[in-house]
Length: 188
Image (cartoon, rainbow, N blue to C red; front, side, top):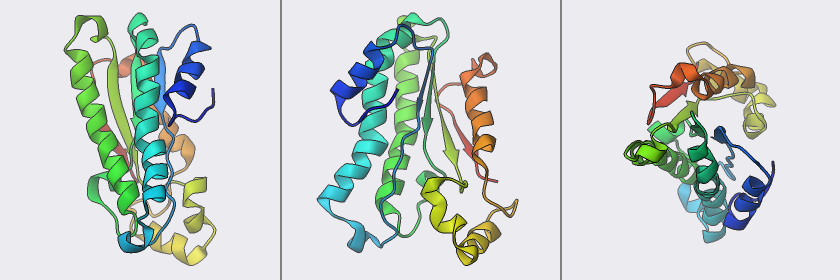
């Protein structure tokens, strides 16, 4: 289902169309610029980034929680980012929102595990490094930029989306039933 997840009503509308939710994957994310903090900061830009990267996952989780509680083994999987752990020049606002996702994951996991009616819901996150996605087209379409970023990755290349999908599938499966509040870094 699709919708503007920064709006609680849109999230509820998406969930209302479903009869059952066993797995919620919060994977929306944007990064608007590659400028320094002084250049990139505007209230409008901050609101747009935080609405997609933080407000959206919170709204979707809140809307889906009643159906997740009705499931026998529910999973919430949040997508953060490697640079949410370490920071990155010219990505201050994006890094801040992705770091917030890490603590949202840990805090929500603890909160749900503390109540009998939601103890079967696990909450984990995945922090991708550099992957060949539309968001990273600035690297993949520029041979010099691609070579520079690839040289900083031990495997010497960007990841492919299916390489991230495997970790998400693991977290969605019963193989991860004893994991909650964890973040898995997939960064080559």
